[in-house]
Length: 267
Ligand SMILES: C[S@@+](CC[C@H](N)C(=O)[O-])C[C@H]1O[C@@H](n2cnc3c(N)ncnc32)[C@H](O)[C@@H]1O
Image (tube, rainbow, N blue to C red):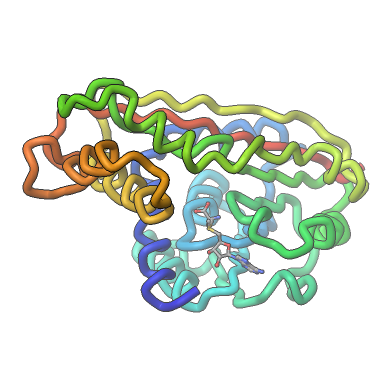
């Protein structure tokens, strides 16, 4: 990933954390309920800018969290945020390529991997590493997006009803992965596969409009020539800061997405 792609990804991850804060709190609470005692040693695989690391460090005030990521830029942002939150003593950034083997994390009580496993060349090997580095009874939480967030109403007021649905249909990459068999193959016992249906309406977090713009711009950049020109023009109006239809001015946004977490235990 180039420097500018990493910067763009980091912004998206930080907006995601701000907008989906209530979902994240619910997820972390649920993992607390599934854990046999509050986890003290946590590893975040592919931590990015620290969404999971920081939420876990805040939810479990005695825990030490090791954030593993390939990107020094992501880890820099993560450690700066940890310091600002007074968590520097319990949060450690560890630069490592998980495709090259398991880094020196020691044994942990909880391993967390959010939106990261699908990036790995050999996720089975990473899951085997997680198994080896969890204590017996320890928990692994794998979270992946079931579908990319949607924001717009069906009628966006520019005469192209159903625009956002067509954007997603054009980019549909097929059914999302079921991680259950992968986890069982690595030796884990599946505790639950829980979809979190997120549907934010009404009074939305302040970062929502920018989040919608960044997400829709990302989708726009992947659309091919076969996408209808009239739909592209309508999407461009939504993405144009100066347009009356701009996502930054709209009062009809919602946030709809599904994230699934597979919680599995080392027997
Ligand atoms: C989509 S981001 C998810 C970040 C974070 N877990 C979150 O939920 O916000 C994926 C992260 O995985 C990292 N990553 C991708 N491949 C990796 C690898 N082989 N080893 C370590 N980290 C990797 C990327 O640098 C990126 O920060």
